[in-house]
Every structure is written in structure tokens, then in C-alpha cells.
Length: 168
Ligand code: 4NP
Image 1: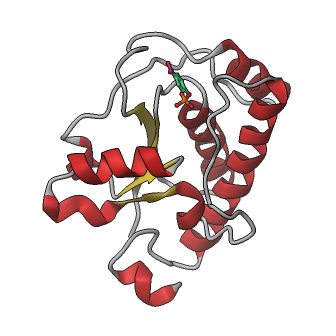
Image 2: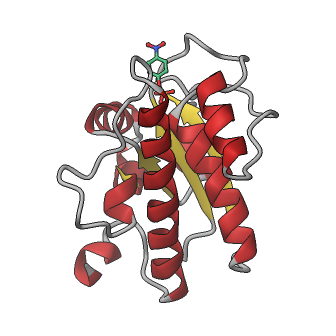
């Protein structure tokens, strides 16, 4: 059973806060009681709010992002969360390298966990050096990905290995 999910990107200002905001709302709307949080593998922006562009596209779509505060990945996160869902391969590599061995299976790509097969590779691209359209694309992936997670959670499909490997 999955009862807690941590969304992970590089800076915790653009992608993972947006995915967290979408997940918080849509899980609640779906009646799923799942703890959600987000963090960054890097520590440059710790304590800051989300990127203004993420806040803008979130608010355009009715999600709240003003209260977000950046935090960095902590080693205790691997014990605390059932699934640590990375936005891209770099974030995933850092997660896997930082994880205590017994929790390493809990870290996978967000879009992979969501079962979104149409995106190859299944990553949420870093929009930091891009324009607002890149942030709107992140929001679209966040909504599709979260809906994919909801669909799997409703079916009782574990999001992460080892049992997930047998059910994909
Ligand atoms: P995020 O985007 O990982 O989606 O939050 C970035 C945020 C900050 C930086 C890079 C990506 N940075 O280089 O500071």
C-alpha cells in the first residue's frame, strides 16, 4: 500500500512543487488519503518560495503554490516515504546514490510510476532556463502523471518495486 509520496526534482522551485500541488488537490478530490511532499536534490534555493513562473501557471489552473518552501532531500526521506518519484534521470540517479540500500527500490521516475507510456523518455523536462510554455508543459505532465498515479492507486497497483515489477 502506498500512503506517502515524495516528489523530487533538482531545485524544488519549478517542477516538484507543481506536481505536489496537483497531487495534493487531485488525491483529495479522488478521496485518497496520501501524504504528499516535495524536495530538491540540490540545496541552492532552500527556504525560498516556488519559482514565480510555476506559481503563475499553477494559479492559472486553480492550484495553490504561494505557501511552498524549498527543502532539500534528507536521508530520513527514504524511510518516511513509500515512493520517492523523480522528475528526470539525473534526479533519480542522485536518489539511488543517496538511498540506504534497503530503500533503494522506493525511488523511480514519476512518469514511469504513473504508467504514462506515451512519453519517451518518461521525464518531466527542467523548465528553469525556458519560457512560460515550458512551465505549462510541466503542468500538463503533472496533471497527466497524477491522474495515472490515481488510476494505479485505485486499482491497488503498488507504485514501486519489487511488487510493481510483476504488475506492469
Ligand atoms: P527544478 O528546476 O529542479 O524543477 O526546481 C530548477 C531549479 C533551479 C535550478 C535548476 C533547475 N538551478 O540551477 O538553480
